[in-house]
Length: 351
Image 1 (cartoon, one colour):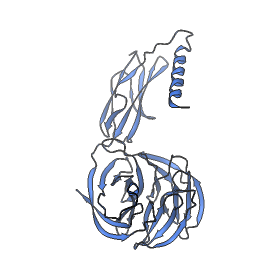
Image 2 (cartoon, rainbow, N blue to C red):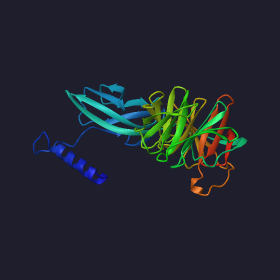
Image 3 (spheres, rainbow, N blue to C red):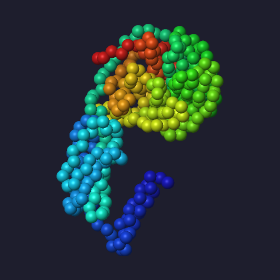
Image 4 (cartoon, rainbow, N blue to C red):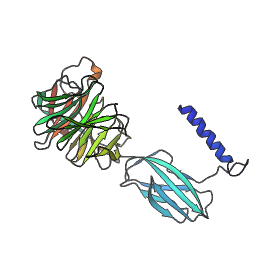
């Protein structure tokens, strides 16, 4: 069913509903409604929001205010209710007022878009070291453990899981069947998990042998993109502004955060890395890495990676920054790109 037919059906149902219960006589279309906030209003996190309603009948018993499903206030009269958005998750939030009078309940709804309260800091970088990197790797996932890189290379017919030395030598490789486009990967203890792009499946490997232990379903998002692990929770991107939180044992979602800066949603979140309590995310097809607060989803800073000196690609449209790895012991950050001939150790510098 297309959108136009769905809209017509919804309109027909609405018209029929007006004539139900009272025979051929339509019910009054008048109902209580929010005068503030306006639908879709953009609000900075932490701001106080005045919830105001136009009541059809002011002889009420009570009004219960909810944000999404959480009750945030109660009024016994028709006065406005002031709600602080501090600690409210960023993103599209539904505002509901349940109005009770004489045993009858009426609802008024509105919604807001809650964005970050602060402008992200602007960072640049300094190259500390440059290392060779294989141009056969269409990088989708990159991590550094025990002195080596673990890398997920994508593209149909060329996907693989690799263990790579700092000098760029492939030490171990497990090819992925050509029907799959490998995506993000992360190390979880003695296992490695790897996503696929559109095939709705993930792989679990033994970290030492790269033996495939099992496959698991990936069906809660349209596509598989990036992965990282903070020691307790797996984080997963799908190209939107949502980062899913996955159970480290079942790989099923247990929550999510929506990523926003002070302007609005930040989409195209791709390869991820957990660095000192923050999420670092490549923004696909851009030269930016976003530093994200995992508790709120707010972008705290952008690192502009423009100008990294790597060899030219045959197809300029495939020249994409993607791949962040962190050496926890040496406190080193590494970055590279898809089929780049170089991998860089960088230092992040505030402008």
